[in-house]
Length: 162
Image 1 (cartoon, helix red, strand yellow):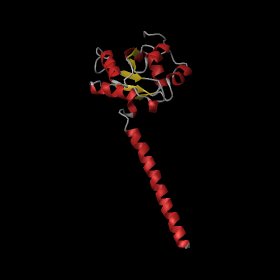
Image 2 (cartoon, rainbow, N blue to C red):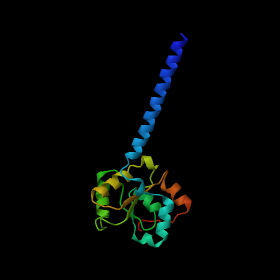
Image 3 (cartoon, rainbow, N blue to C red):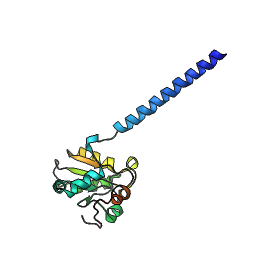
Image 4 (cartoon, one colour):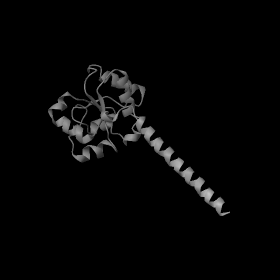
């Protein structure tokens, strides 16, 4: 009887370990599933420094979220290119970048919601890459633009024009 109890614990332990491994593999797979590499992700503090410096003049910053968010405040110099979560938004994005060289340094951001839930950033990135843009980065906004940019005191431009 005692032997059966030890065998039962051993099986439960093995199942638990297998479940932990599957969870870990799933987390790794979800990171690998992002359409960009780690080197294509820029943090808000880094972008804030870049736009204040000489390098910022060469960046093309595109806001791919909702117009109301853009008008309330956006990264200085950012162009409003519309939400990329639907076909009309992706068409607007294509029009927005039509005159931008394929080798330009482009930074995309949305800021509507937490990074993992954003419906716009991934389709926008994929669209630009499929169009042949080779230097596309994404700004990682973990929570939202207000918390991860505005509240940190980074520069803001309000209104509908950059």
